[in-house]
Length: 388
Image (cartoon, rainbow, N blue to C red; front, side, top):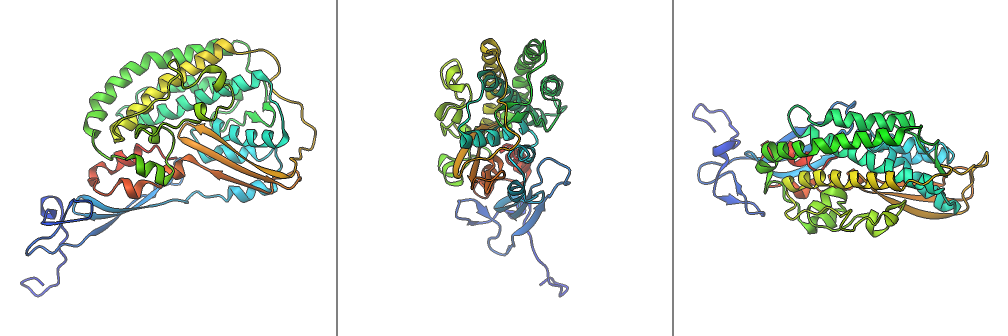
């Protein structure tokens, strides 16, 4: 109660939030003798629905430090898993690539692989190698978006555009490629495409050294020790991909459960290593992402060098029926493990098709990651999970 008889609520901000009480994590809480403060709840988001990932964070603050975080997702949920059940095996691919707008080719790939496994189908070698090449180009596109977006002026977007043009020339699609088919690819790449692909990745390589310098000067130094994600939290929340590997969790399906041409390429060897971090902080996550681009470019080079000839698809009957049964296919998508659980009852449509998206698992760790972080660092820390 104030001296004028009005009821007042004291919310600690900045130095005024410092007190003598500490929370369970050991951080100072507002308060102390004569300063009874109350936590404040702050909404961040949701962003405009036209963005490629609508996330809302409900933050409980003690001054400028986060006490609790509740991520709220689902603003763009379209019931895709139920839509899968009323579309045949050729049509469902178009529903898959929209779950990560930056990884559309990889999303399509997992669906096609699940159906092919149910059918016991062998995909032609040329299609296997082209799929590997295009999946890695897709990985480069995804990583460059987050790396460039973290720095002023969006550096490396010109090089990213060159890779995007190569993907568009091969598939005919700029964002949602729809290039995978059950049994391979829609068609072969055009004449001269491999040379243009080499030119595009050479441009990215030349830019990476400058991007590395910008990251270290503008970003990595001020994010060291910020937003530390430990190994236990990674395993508990099902975090995967570059975010998990930045915390030292040595898991990469391209090496540990090889698919496509990764085993033949020797992925995980000294030539094509799995990139790991040491500290699990925000700086490590961005540094690992940059190093991953180097490895992906090396994979693309190896695919171009070893690309076999021959057909790129299997001729399918007018009606595709998967035999009764179930299977689980997973891929190492740009943002982590993407899983597809397919159940068939012998019909032309899936009985059930459930997707495990990489971003859902990664964003789920925010309640364990953000407490103790200052409000000014929220965007940087949350952004280092690369959610879509």
